[in-house]
Image (cartoon, helix red, strand yellow):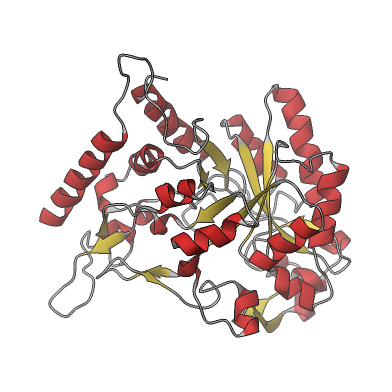
Length: 397
């Protein structure tokens, strides 16, 4: 209980320091890099409600007010870019229920991690179009599984343009080159196709409604060298948190960019959040997309045996058994380097919320908004929008 009280006190102090509200000269200044309200980025669409990265999930996110829709790009056997988070189709589609594809199940390594399933590079687009998307979280609605189809990058570009015209507001997109080294090694490089599609869309500029992201610096650098002039974002990952210390932990495949592993570079992602790392990123990118724990981490209560305690006694150890701690200086450091900050991923499930957020995701967003994040990746657009509205109101806007 004392740990929770300390965390709440720290959070309250942070809010007071970061948010002074309306002053005598008008609305308070926002701490974002450009002074504008933070973006709400629909992570894989409204993935908290519908199977991710489908047009239906993106439509729902836009209806809920998203500024940006986000997608991951992987390649089919015939070289078409599709929206899936993983090359392994078993994770997010109903491929296992299609007997005709049973023989394609195999065990391989993806970015150093051994996986068993069906992989996008073994399927043509026509074959993938027979599959349906499924929810990737057992706590989320399952009744839509298999009903919505996998879409291509080009279909999403066309969709975003149509929705922008229909709604009268600009809907930006946020594609990621996913596992680019993996696909390049298979003879299915994606970067040239990404650049070509963006150029054909008339979006090859810093002011266009598009952000291009990757965990691999080489992918971003290659596209930049090929003439891509959109906003570029370096993603920064980690595996988990040491509940005793709050320190980041690292494990394959999210310990470092896979291209580093392949080259024998043993540094982890944490080198990217140092001043030197941020300065390096600024030479090829416009922003960073760090796991949110690089900004506000958590700590658990530790028992006499040195192991984290199941504080809420639900039989599991997770974020709900921990409390948030004082933030790092990453946002300020990145802004000083001229980089915007879009942390990932904000979710509503109680197991993913530190105890001091009182099972209300809006309390988590509030901290990050007040710290000056330039945008948030969220599975629940409506919660992010509601929290932003409350935050802006507190700032006299």
